[in-house]
Length: 473
Image 1: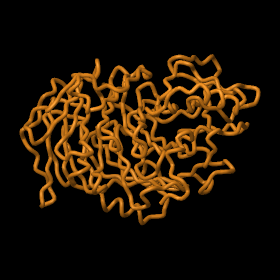
Image 2: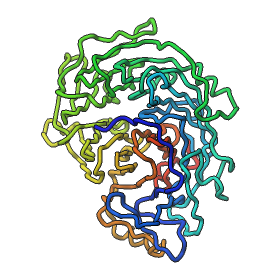
Image 3: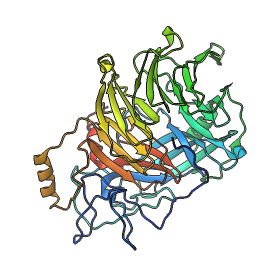
Image 4: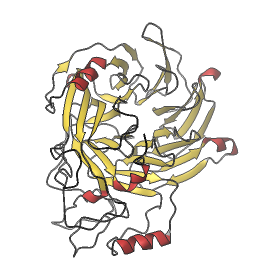
């Protein structure tokens, strides 16, 4: 398992890294055919550098909040349940990984005026080689067909002092201003950040990155594990119910009280033989959650049946780092391993022995994040230590006629690698040491990712089909 970011690292502005749509083309000089560059396979010759292909995105922006962040969460807001029109506004919470424990904070921030484009499924060839500089908030802002203005996004930031690095942070689905943060000190703390979110919502003044005032605030509740950890998840069905797992193989259940605090059962759930890496509550059963571990296993727990797993099975041949329970198809569970493999299981098939319905070995480095799309039951996004963010659609199959038609439309400017899985829908590159990603639940097609060199907001153009029609509410 690869975890920490030891030092602050800013994005490099000299070496441009490709962010390519797998199997797509565009924005190329007419005399140079398009080629999809594969990290770990293709080599750069001396003097060569990769360029971002802006036509692969409806929107692409980068920003940072000072220190790198291992973990963040996108907050549900009141700006609309389904938003498709640019410019967009997004609220976040993130925990920093500073060089000194006392320098850390929880960042509460708003990114507004997120601009972008509406594109045709097959982009027109052109000569506009727009590039992205990951140092500041920017993207294809100078394009003529951009909606929402050309000045680019603005970042407003507030910080709450936090002792120690934040290993993982999660917002409560039912009350987004409440968050739980795992610290490398072994503490899990619950915070009420409502006043900061209200201040951001009411403010129209653009914040200055990295120099926001740091507020001192006490958490609502604090619990000390015997070791640090990363696994934490709020129940999507029972407001305030929380589970946290640590590197000491233990999982603790938090139950909310009427007094606005929590009762944490001192008797942990035990069954893993190594560190618990991730937790996911069932989207349909309030007493059921799943966990994954360095022991290579996934366990299913029912809180009504005691402190041992209701089921446990070998999921990967290496550490299982992350997992995601599909909220649109609750029988599907995805997991990612230290060996780079991704597995999709149908939990209805567990009793039959082989529940794996899809298995991918595209990534060659540890999987650091995995999440099902909140809008498409067959789609999921994955990040890896190989500096790639990939989007997969399990409903896709290879279609020779469609490929031929696409190549004809693009005048055979596409030379996609033959060995790419047909389910691999998109490859995003350019960030260094990717750690976590999330889909935006209210903006179809938007993904946000965090890495050593900051955040990216991206909306790939070839998942435009997930956006609602003009007549949708």
